[in-house]
Length: 331
Image (cartoon, rainbow, N blue to C red; front, side):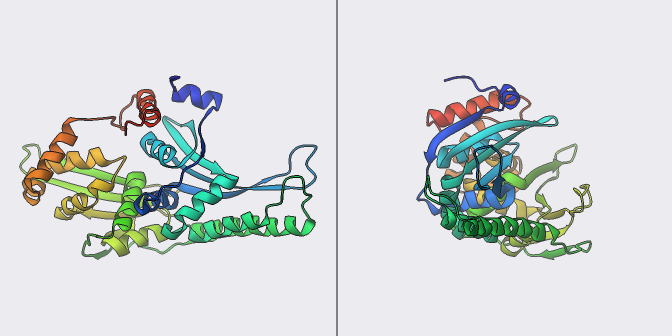
């Protein structure tokens, strides 16, 4: 096994690849992948007219999911195959999982029933598959025109999605709900892993403890989905500087609702499962009273047997350990 230094990986623009594409049969895993795509992903039709031998413009479908947490990207690599790359984004490393052409069609077809936000983009991208020509057969001008229409349509869908905005300067709130559907919980876990933040606070003397779960995102439809399925509070996030003309929205759950929601979604989390465990253990008075002895023992064991904490500064060790576990099938 060759050591994978993410800094060298970024500089050399190397890519880790798993041959072919794997499609899990478990609907929960597909729902989790759909949540990552809706929250962290991008669907593109790549247009290529380069090369002196190319007589017509080439169009290829690409699906990309990016995150600063390698655990998410490694999970995708192990469960779906595909390719992984790394790049430095300021002071952080950014990791990307992506698939192209046939593999992107297979992936989108598998997760399409579970997508909530980018379903229209996925359906548009999948239409490109019907226009693929056989190798060695010249592409007609009519087919090229249809591909260009799909290329422009996908760009327009993204533009319209990014333009969605409602002023939520006045907080809207509803009681917190706790989903029971497994696919919904997997999807929610993916959003929390990719976009969520778990916070714990206590007084100097430790007499009062509180925790919260927040998600900040520019996609209003994603925030509405969370609000509709989980409840909580939704408003403009004035603590975040908007990127360009996009407004940032914030969803929040706090007080005792945090404990109950973490207990509901805990087993479906991947990247932030350890953080959720820590918070549950820190809120002993409230969370442990809700657990049976078996669940208490499981949480204690998990908390004490740490794998890799991805908030760590040692990103090199994180990625190497993650890739090693994937290739050795230890996780």
